[in-house]
Image 1 (cartoon, protein in one colour):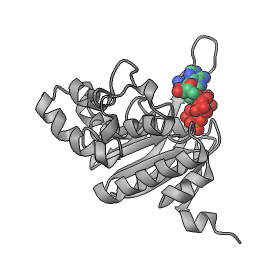
Image 2 (cartoon, rainbow, N blue to C red; image 1 turned 120 degrees about the vertical axis):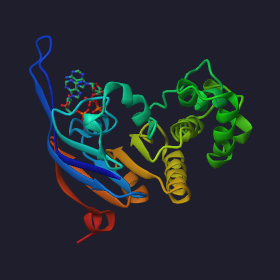
Image 3 (spheres, rainbow, N blue to C red; image 1 turned 60 degrees about the vertical axis):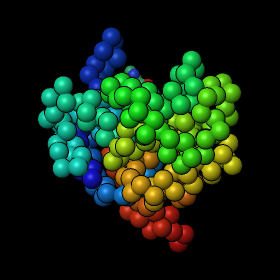
Length: 234
Ligand code: ADP
Ligand code: ADP
């Protein structure tokens, strides 16, 4: 579903700060339906990797194949359609405080020009999937952290993506809520057959959620393999 080949990203020098090499030759294959964790300390290049998959950053060189297409060759006008195949879930939820749960989840569809009926058809099954049927008309300020992240997950699923990219999605949550959100993501992966890329700095997230893991350091993948293999105790 996703194939990264010899991916490099250098942020150009700007206002006194020198250029910065963030990715130096990443090769990664992610099969359809797989949950792959990308783990590494702060500054390892994890966020840059995800932003090169959704093309929020253009790679300096290398290929990003998503579902058979090298997306680095897409014309600018094709990017919105491409990005709709990718759901994004964020650490700090990124909800709009002036919008209800329902209207937050609807936002990507509204931006894509979907009709009210199309939006309702997409969202009605998502609310029970993430356990928010009774919160649809609430505002973010009325929700717990875990509930806010459920809204973030439903919003990521609203455009029926093939791939979901998760960036530190439990880092702002307590341990019990973290456990519940990871179980929800696992359940969604099983039910919908989605491919997931999960950025984290926490081993526990990888162990509970992921099938495979890539360990990043200094802009390269230093190790990758099945979660059981990499974390097996000697
Ligand atoms: P974290 O390790 O917590 O993810 P980062 O240092 O990677 O934090 O950066 C957080 C955000 O700041 C990122 O979205 C990144 O784009 C931006 N950022 C980081 N370093 C720079 C920099 N040197 N110049 C401009 N933006 C930066
Ligand atoms: P991680 O997500 O693993 O913390 P990032 O991908 O955010 O790592 O950052 C990798 C490196 O690239 C860091 O040293 C960071 O400071 C730098 N960086 C990230 N974004 C930018 C940016 N927009 N401009 C310049 N440097 C950046």
